[in-house]
Amino acid sequence: MNRLMLVAPVIAAMLAANVFADDKAGWISMFNGKDLAGWKTNEKPGSFKVEDGAIVVNGPRSHAFYVGDDGKAEFKDFHLKADVMTMPNSNSGIYFHTRFLDEGWPDRGYEAQVNNTYKKDPKKTAGLYNVKDNFKAPVGDNEWFLYEIIVEGKRIVVKINGETVTDYTEPDNLVRPDRQLSQGRIALQAHDPGSKVLFKNLKIKSLD
Image (cartoon, rainbow, N blue to C red):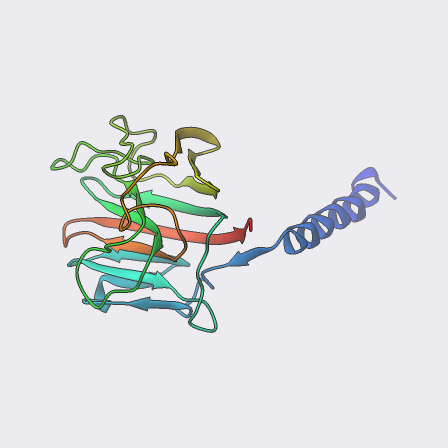
């Protein structure tokens, strides 16, 4: 028996242990890689489709809200992870603590920006839109990158490929009832017909 044959079962056991550890940690898969089950879109459902295991966001303004298997999924404190890829001159966003609307831009919670080279807006990926903006793209187009959003209490941390880009603590005396931390849905944004952004491996863990 060669060394590889001896090592292989050990590696398999480690991988299995990691899978079980992930399950016990409470991660919820938000996307099955096949269709938009668990998501509810508004305005222009055609702006969201699934291709090659990814959610492709491309078309007129619309938003896809994660509602889960029971249609009621909302989160307060959480850790979200997603693999994201932007095409050149594209704009999108990940909303959180928001609510479903039949049309229009979400009017609750925060938007974590997704924009590496969109010419009409200088606010770049990983900023909290109009709250704590980032003006330097942390990554380029046409490449997958890991996007993380962590909300605990009044603190919001946004990471790209493991590196913190935004670390914001909401003031205790903030009076902005429509745009402050509370609880709500996660949503993906289709910004305009010229923007194309891909999402895959979306998962979330409640930290409550």
